[in-house]
Image (cartoon, rainbow, N blue to C red; front, side, top):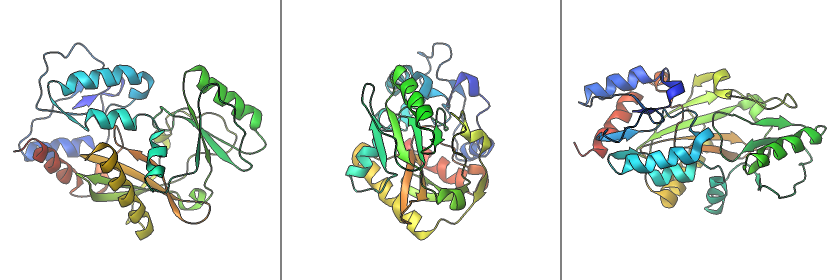
Length: 283
């Protein structure tokens, strides 16, 4: 079980997963991907979904992933980590016919104009809402400074039209194990206009178990099919879907690296995940 050195407590779903892994005959250990040299750690399987904070050291993380994949089964695979760690993957999904939040990708040195309504600025490489901010049309100077700061860090900035329905309806987060739907939760809206750049939005999440609306499920299944075609099968995934400004659902994110899987909210979900991992080992 790979974690980050600053987040070794993992999350509230970890005890359930650990118990489920024991039940199916697997013996999990927790190691920090950015800890001491692990060249002698030839584990059967390395699960990376607890590597919170990898985005601040993406290249080092991917280098570690390549090394880990050379001696163990890396889950999700390195090609998935490389693709999903940069949110420009949204362009690939859109090209593949997946409805995604309207997004403009602003590379360093590229000029841009703020949208005419509320919008969100976030980095292409980011996690947990870090360095994201919502702006109203009245705050273009602050948004320009935000984009310039991301560019100074070598980041591509994502400029996304804010989907106002999220203020009322929130997000539907759907979790998949082995490409099959497991469970879903509702996430309340977190970004407020013109309050500045946020850090670790996940710390303020309001989560409720939910049966996903049929239209949201269909979009999530479409996204998962596109992911499989682009980078192959995944052992775990979370697809966040919201209602767009025109009332039709769109994908906000597809999380394939370190998503919160909310195992504690759905009975049997940890067992489903453990069985998928066991199957990958061929036992």
